[in-house]
Length: 378
Image 1: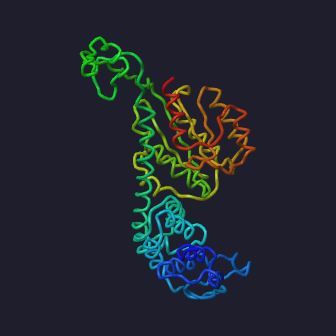
Image 2: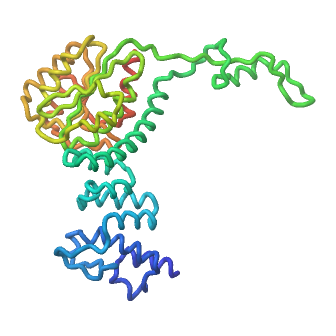
């Protein structure tokens, strides 16, 4: 086995394997120290009598000081590891080991790579941040939201710009050039000597636009801590849909209180900085508020993004949803609105809402966009 392969196995297996693999070169020793700084915090290692050791020697718990500071560690992993590994290490630092200075030290925040896991952590803890730290954290919010908006905006444009049909068009646009029909109608001008068709009359497709009558979309978003990912994607989705012709978009956040955030819907960064995660949940109150926003019941979608764990009145919630459905409003009960769409939710309450006419499930933001587009085109 080659030396590089042996070093990789040593990194995977830890110091105990050195008698078989040999030691580490300077670069891989740095990687081992960075991994040890993070993963030697795992209590499970002690239970299994495993000691990573690494650059600090055998670690046995307690309050030993770290040789590396968080800033040093971040600088090291950005130099030593590929991007995908860096994101995993930073996510584990924030979510698994709750290394708090990642979120409280402006110098750390200035160095860390913005990513969705870090954005969730910022939103959960921003109420504890002083103004200086909050300014640094805002950079993370802005960058991650920018990426999400760019990605979803492409999908929104694709869904809502219409599609070509087979009717001819008098408008000559390169993207609508009808090659098949053009060749067929100009074959009589084929020149065998140079094997070319002289195009005397090009043909073009026409383009149909979706017929957009005035619809409403009311996004009701549960801001309890477990729904952080859905809150982020709800804000981004609302921002991408807000400017569409024929659609009036509302965004309402709720816990035990209801906060209409529609005035900030075109600025998802500002909106997320105002969201207060945590607290109880009164879904019935939020749905009652949404019912009061409905202008034309048969031209309205109420998308309720929640885990369905009702802290208010379950019977009132079911009754209001039933009324909305009976009057022709499309009610979506979404247990998740994010890229994973792997929800944890109260299946009993979700089932009760489905039984009175709500569409219940989980969606990615692009699926919600497609659902809205289908309704607007009818």
